[in-house]
Amino acid sequence: MKTLRFNQDGSSLAIGSDNGQYKVYNCDPFGVCYEPEIMQNDQIGRVDSSGSKDLKNDGYVLVEMLFATSLVATVRATEMPEIETKRLKIVNTKRHSIICELVFPSAIVDVLMNRKRLCVLLEAGHIYIYDISCMKQLDVIDTGSTAETTDRRRARMSLSTDDCSILCYSRPNNSNSSSGGVDATPEVSQPYRDIVVYDALECKPINYLHNLHVGSIAALTVSTDGKILATASNKGTVVRVFSTESSDENNSQSGSILYEFRRGTKPCKIHQLLFNKESTLLGCVGNTDTIHLFKLDDLDTANPTAVQMHDSEPLEDSSEINNHSNNSNNTATVSNTTIQGKKLISYFSHKIKKTISNQNMSRDFAHISTSSNSEGENSPTPVQNSKSGHNNSNAVKNTSSKDINNYNKNSGARYIIGFPQEFNNQIYVAGDNGSFDVFSLPKNGGKCVLAKSNRWSV
Image 1 (cartoon, rainbow, N blue to C red):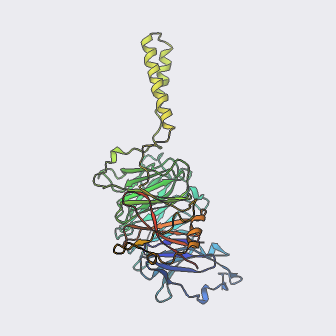
Image 2: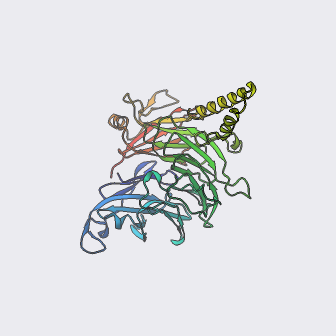
Image 3: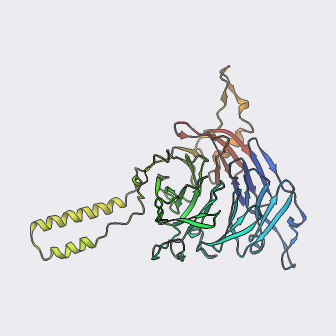
């Protein structure tokens, strides 16, 4: 499977396969709503730019939808990725026509859209900003990445889905810079642990967040209104939520941490973070068997100063201890020895505490298990008829025991989540094993209940 992603409001699911096709599914009711016709220039026998060789279509690496509209952006892979992975097509699914085609200087890594802006992240580290109404190029941002940059140390980006068009992207840490501002030249050798908050409407940076994690940022997401940002590092044990707004008009580099959540103690590769529309829930998906859902309290009552980053605070400077050690050689009094001993105890106690994982951080409010030891543990719960008191087995559509067992045993599958805006008590989970499942969110936390299970194919 090349690509699997929901649209901005969770109403549709785009799937791009290895066989050169892609489909768009409607989530409720579940079913195919768009399947492109194979046009002559998209067939396997397409001729490359040199005219000397046919290209084999190896699938679509990106399919990005614009809400529930007919606008879809696609990036295709072929035997010659140096050609096709640089080409972005904007397609009208109703007219089955290509609106425009853009070719970039390097391979396309990610494409994000809202109703105002189109953002394209390239392998070479540049982000191209377009006005989606006329496809006019507005700006080009250099994030500091290069084509040789590894995936663990590469720029990431997230675009708010509403019209405010707040773009957040990571870049190398430039703490050595004297200014530390957004215009400082990024150092590629540094971890990608800084975030630039960028106004894509006005095409200017509006905030800069320093040293959000010890390692490079592996996943990030910005809320619908662009006011808060969630990040996770390559280690994947901690998820943090920051304010993207400057708390001081005279200091554009301020960014308050609002929440800090413990995902787990073992390292994990997190590949998706996602807020719901109201920014009351934060979903976290990684390469483990559990999808975590963190609950965000009322942001108006959150106290940013009460939350401290436990894994990025520097150790206490030992220079003061060394100075006292030198002075103690010249002093033989018992009082000085006692003071020195207390300082050493304090120093080593502080250092030992830093090596212990903080267990006081908030854990997930709810979770979804993508694999189960017992068959049927995640099976849909029949809806009970309140009048007759009997279970209504017809309330669950398109579900069979075979599908449920396949769902539980596919522990190696990759999953993504979507929050449907029209059903705020549900969450969608799609996997590259062909599963599409609807879970009900528990009111008091705990394990989410599987309500519907479907299968997709391309």
